[in-house]
Amino acid sequence: MFDIVWSGISSVFRYIYILLIYLFMFWIIRLIYLDIKGIKNKEIRGDTYLKLINRKDSLPFKVDEFYSLVSNVTIGRSNGNKITIKDPYISKEHAQIIKDKDAYFLEDLNSANGTYVNNIKINNAIKLSSGDTITIGRINFLFVIEE
Image 1 (cartoon, one colour):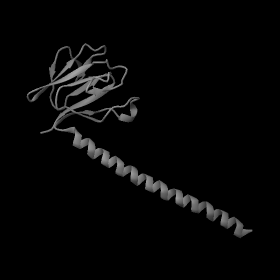
Image 2 (cartoon, helix red, strand yellow; image 1 turned 90 degrees about the vertical axis):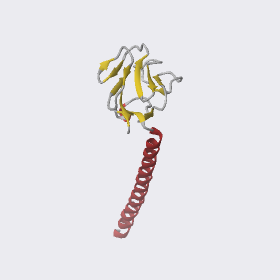
Image 3 (cartoon, rainbow, N blue to C red; image 1 turned 180 degrees about the horizontal axis):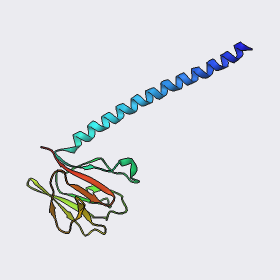
Image 4 (spheres, rainbow, N blue to C red; image 1 turned 180 degrees about the vertical axis):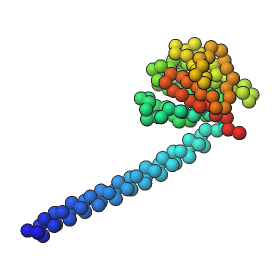
């Protein structure tokens, strides 16, 4: 009787041990994937970029953590924009960032909900400085110029 119970318990522990090994392997593979993904994001960024301030997992739509700003960029909900964000609070053509020599300017394109820099609504094109926060819809970006 004791041998039958012991063999049953032994089998259960054997399966639990195998399951733990698979979970550990999955965890290691996931860490490797996230590390490689982080390296790719850093390579894509460039010298001037927008960095997402919001937590990605708190947003009900897809948004990247970094957006490189190598040339003029339009931001909006429609697919014709260089930065497309499917936030319902963002207009189809919401704003644009214009590069003029070494300066960057943000301009609202008559959006319904406005564009904000450092929590101040902008009406005209405004020159951006590194460290400015840009709010478009429910999205908050940090404007970064690396030197």
